Image (cartoon, rainbow, N blue to C red):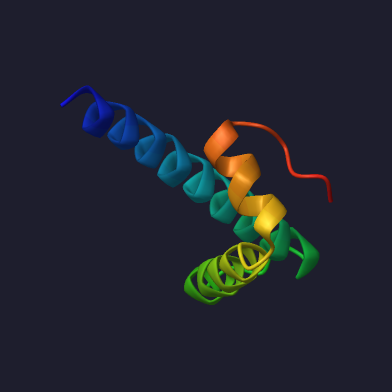
Length: 72
């Protein structure tokens, strides 16, 4: 049972890290567009796409699981 608990903690940490990355990137996109209101969903979806595309790189996955920053 302890192994499952450890896996759950890692999964929660990865989920929280991904949410933070998406949130930060969505805000960056909003600022890049000159803080124009009304495109928040578009910014969010674009941020998700970018963040999850970055996960295709093995260093990103390892960094998330280890709680470290990626090399990029």
